Length: 179
Image 1 (cartoon, rainbow, N blue to C red):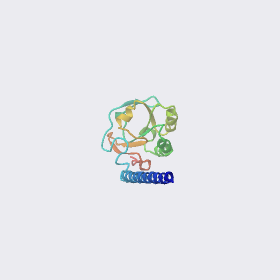
Image 2 (image 1 turned 90 degrees about the vertical axis):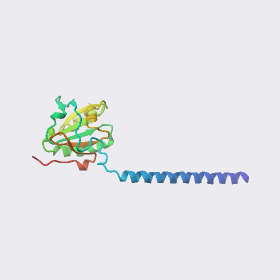
Image 3 (image 1 turned 120 degrees about the vertical axis):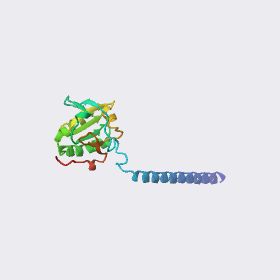
Image 4 (image 1 turned 180 degrees about the vertical axis):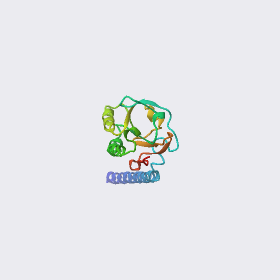
């Protein structure tokens, strides 16, 4: 009988400890949920902020043409993707549709595919009809120039090369008024 009482008391003690730990986890999850709810994509768009200009860069697009910061004239939409990013794969069709309607066409849209995964050429192939595509590789020179630290993301450069808007919400993609 004393073993049974000891076992019941031990089981109750473990149950109470488990309940206390569960309540602590729930409280912590509520704190994190509140923190994330108060944060919008404008707080941290994942790349350079509006009003800043990207650093100088030099790259070559998939057509073999040079792409430099000073060559981006007019309103230019720049988007960053990575093949190992599920959100990028999900957003790609919507971006392609949006880029196809962008004023100035393919010359005013720059899509950057970062990484060295085998899927990089396939992702680039989906973008070539609507954008000039740059394969950024692992060094990420364009990602560094645009201060990218999240994928997928985009920014709109004005004719002076300054970022007008940037973000990661694809529903917020801007369409400048035709000139």
